[in-house]
Image (cartoon, rainbow, N blue to C red; front, top):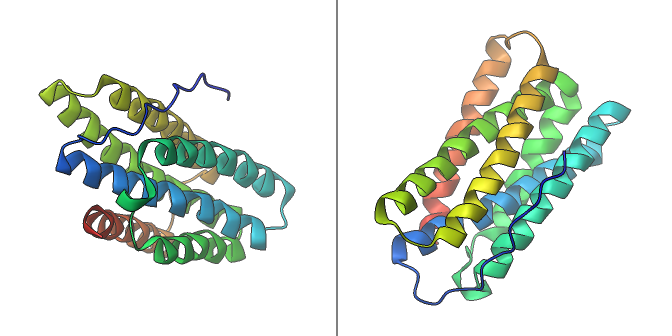
Amino acid sequence: MTHHRPAAPPAIPDLPAWLVGELRSDHAGETGAVMIYRGILAVARDPALRDFAARHRATEQGHLDLLEGLLPPARRSRLLPVWRVAGFLTGALPALFGPRAVHVTIDAVESFVDHHYQQQIDRLDAEGIHPAIRALLAQCQEEEVHHRDEARALAGAPPGALLRGWAWMVGAGSAAAVMAAKRV
């Protein structure tokens, strides 16, 4: 699925502190997302799963590139090495168990990301500020929802208890990572 992607707005020095924190968490999240797919590709041998991961990694790299154009290095999370390792493991571990575990993992991650982006979009709308940033976030959100929906369809039947527990851990870990990345 190819989308016309809005150009990244130029880095804006006078962003409100809350938005800098949100963009820092978005950048950290997209860094982790790229690494999730790298982790899958490092482990998976199934051709269809490798294609899924390669396509999604390219989209996530596009999101990361947009955010890097918006957020100067000094404003990015200082925990990026942690997010890279956590992302890689979040992709590699389920890939050891096969496509279904990967698809349930991606569904969990992208469900969290959809809500996270929506909260930011809602606040930008409420404050009536930075329409170019809002457009960028909305485009990223749309593509993340597409990833979630594709993963959900490929996963098939609802997951059993073990995969539900794993998905809960992935969602809780994503929430904790966002809280940390907003601050550090």
